Amino acid sequence: MHVIHNNQLDLREIVFIIQSQNNSFHVRQADKRRADLLKQAQGLTKKPPVVLLLHSLSHNEGDWSILPLLPYLSYSFGKNSSWIVFLEEETNVKMNTLIQVLAKFDKNKDWFLGKPLHDEESTIIHHYAFAENPSIFKYPDFAAAWALSIPLVVRLANKVRDEPLKSDFTIDLKHEVALYIWDSGKGPDLTAVPELCTEPENSPQALYCATTLSSEPPLCVSICSHSESVFLLDVKPCIGFFLPFALVPVIKKTWEKDALFLEYYSDHADPTIPTINLGVPNTERGHCGKTFAILQRFLSSAVPNTKWLLIVDDDTLISIPRLQVLLSCYDPSEPVCLGERYGYGLSQGGYSYITGGGGMVFSREAVVRLLNSGCKCYSNDAPDDMVLGMCLNALGLPVTHSPLFHQARPEDYARDFLAHQVPISFHKHWNIDPIAVFNKWLKDDLRANPSDGLNKSTKTEL
Image (cartoon, rainbow, N blue to C red):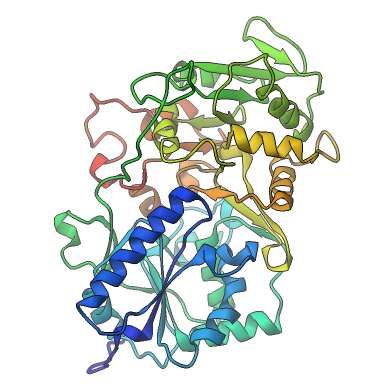
């Protein structure tokens, strides 16, 4: 680890950035994390360190993708700080231990620190990078926190200013940030720091960790009788579930039984499934016309008046009970748009969007505002998720990210990344047995042994 002996580090040399989001639930979570950091700092220094909430730094939609933010960080902290430490809302920090860990590294050099993840096989979400040896490239697990030395921040900021970022897609941010820093071998690799952990905070393995994850999920009050659209966790969901396709055999064998209200859509009515004809022809891609027809139907008297709308593809695998638990944390009277967040052209005035394959969740208020805005598809086969993202951006409505929704298959994600999750969805049936995947990753069976599938004790993110 290139340990530097007798390296003195003051807490005030560390800038903490909580990767917060512009949603009331996430703001509360980030405020709690900030308060904890400042409380710990009181016992270590008279002057507190800088603790920033990412969503509040500017009105730039691209800030969550980190790279467009680097010039600001360089300008604001390049002279008087030594480290920028990024952490998520769920990341617990042992301040004293973290200081000791960072003090091992020469703060005058370029350092990129984190808990390394790697791909077992080349994956579409990483554009099949390093296809011949996917495990060779390491990228950080954001949940464990990750850090950049100020010399590296300054150098990267100059690069961002001199070479504008490409106006393309942001899909898996942690991998893309690592690729940008590595810069085809001209920049530093990620340095593994064993003390940056994703162990539950109360586990024996966390004894020497500087960061951990909360042992318990956030306690969210709430939720549902079918008539009042309020969630109760011991009843079937009171969400409207809409599918734009009619290829449904796997759904009927997996999650359909957990959905109280479910509709299948196609370009013709089939009473054997049954499907509903929305009057919009099926398209090979995009499905924007059909999705907007679903939004309009959700607000009509043709379906029950529910607070939440979930739109999924016919090859989406999803846990409805876990979705219920997650939605108990959100206020349906707010315009909530929830799922796995992607970005397009974020460095050049682009927009964020919910990628459709993992499932798109909308509160009724969000659907009302979308349709009242007059926003619409430019063609029936336009990409529905991206058009919705453009509409939300024009309205100034945030896209809320949850890492528990997945656009791809379990094997497309790093094993250690999934190990501390309770996943809500996966997508695509390519080269897998979808029923087996559902049973292993998404089915909740209290009779199951923890060794069957995921270890329950490591599931801390839901």
